Length: 335
Image 1 (cartoon, one colour):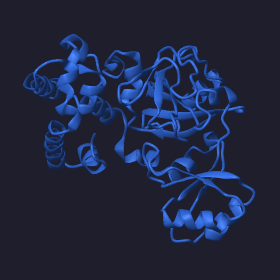
Image 2: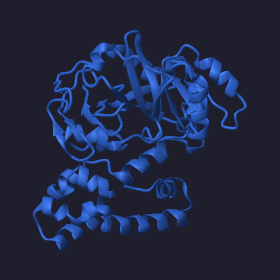
Image 3: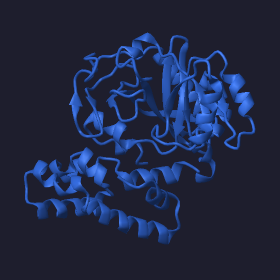
C-alpha cells in the first residue's frame, strides 16, 4: 500500500525524504478505503479503530497492510509485539544487507549473470536500442513460448507470456516497443508442482540469513497461481523447513483462506514439495555468492531435473512469511 516512489524514498532516501514520505504515507493510509471500513471488521466505533491503528503505527511500526493482513485490530499487545512489521523488518534489512551490494537483486540482467549457475534456463538480455535485435531473433528460433519482462520489474509486474510461432521478428519488435529487455526460456515445472495450478509456475520462497559463516533458514512458503500465469497475486502457504511439506492452509493478500486450491480444488495442507533437500542445498549455496547481502528471499521453481532460481529478493515479503503461520516471527530476526 505504498507507491513505488514513496517506498524508495522511505528505504533509500535522505533523512528529510524519509520523514516527509512517512508522514505523507500515514495521511494516505488514513484516507484509504480499506481503512475507512476496517472498523466494521473490528466491530467497534471508527474513532476507536483509527486511534488503535495510529497507536500500532507508533508503537509497533505497523503499516496499513500489516494492520489489516495480520488483523491487529483483533490482537492484544502481547501478540502484536511478536510480529515483524514494516519498521522492524526494514531495520533488520538495513542492518544485515549492504545497500551498495543489493542492486543486482533488483536488476534481472545482473542477477542472471551472477547466479547463472542456478537459473537453469536460457535468458536473453535485449538491448532496448535494438543493437542486438538480430541476435534475439536467432535466439528465438525453435522456441514455442517465452516470458519477457523489464529488467527492474518487481512482484511480476510487466511479465508477459509470448507465443513465438513462426514470427520471432514480431516478438522482438513487441519487446522493444514494450521495453521488455529480459526474454526467458519457458520453465517446465515438475508435474507434482503443476497439479496445484497448471497455468502458472508455482514456486517456493526460501528465506536465508548468513550468520557466522553458516546459513540460517528463516522460513519457507509455497506460492501458487490463481487464474494467472504468474504466482504473484495468487495464494501462499507455509512449508515445513525440515520436511518440505506444506503445514498450513493457504491465504491470499485479501485475507481469504483456502483449504483447497480455489480453481483446481487440490488440497493445500500436506502437499509435498519434490526435490526438497536439493532446494535447500541450492539456496544455502547461493546465499554465499554475495556475502554482504546476508538475508535473501529466494524464489525457486522445481522441474523434473531439480530446482532452479527464479530470482532473489533482498527485501522479502513479511506477509508470505508470517501470515500462514498465524503468528509473529519477529524473534527470528530480532537479534
